[in-house]
Image (cartoon, rainbow, N blue to C red; front, side, top):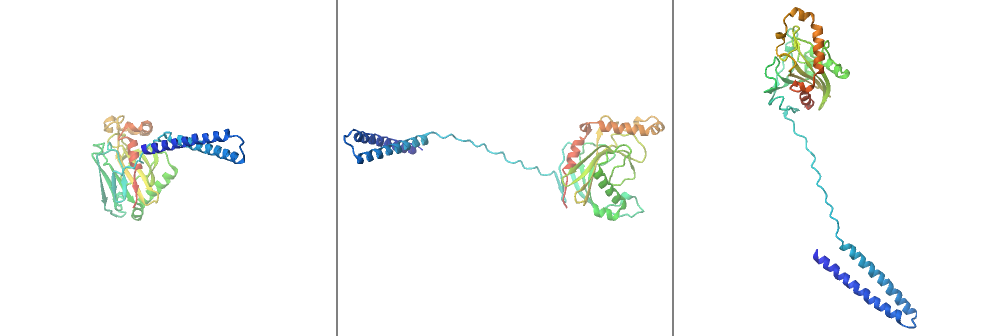
Length: 309
């Protein structure tokens, strides 16, 4: 860099000397008496040479000016998506550790017991995900997520086939649920669905489904923290797989054991419709975070599911 500057300065000195010489020549030409055409031509050539030398000096001056350094900020690297927490047999999902500490995937062999047995005793080979140290420790239901193959289930159970059709219809029309609505649900249990509260429709990674709170029973029973659970029922976009989640939840506003709240069962039965309507309205009015685990966390876990088989 320094040698370049010295070279530029030397060139400037040379050009400046040339200007002085040409100016002296020009003065001699102008000062001579009886100039002729050849002198006029020499005068013009000297003038042009002076202009060119001046331009060269100006260009050198501009080149010597320090150039402004342009700082280019490094572009942030594109954030890569985190890998899913669970991957098994082409099924993957992620979950918050406030829901559970671990997940145990397995393949459950199917069985076809025929029409002489309970409908729930017949099912195809399916994939099951159970939880270690789930947030709710003492509950009637075991927390688990099941993925059924649709065609295999339809082939051995017309009850399941009707339920799959029911889910397709429900997802298309998005029924709001309530205290007198039976929402689609698998697996099939020897009990009745009592209500559907906090109904929410949303997509998972390659399908769609519906989540809601419910309770099952063989007789009327108060809504409590031993029996209330969150479920998600969904279908992949290609209609090949049915996903079902049964995940216990609690709420501080509910009793742990509902039977302890009933002094007169006959009076409770007579007031059942009013009680259930009031309870469903109360559940619907509760914030997502007032449940444990948070309903938002459970929805996010189900929305992360990808089933590629």
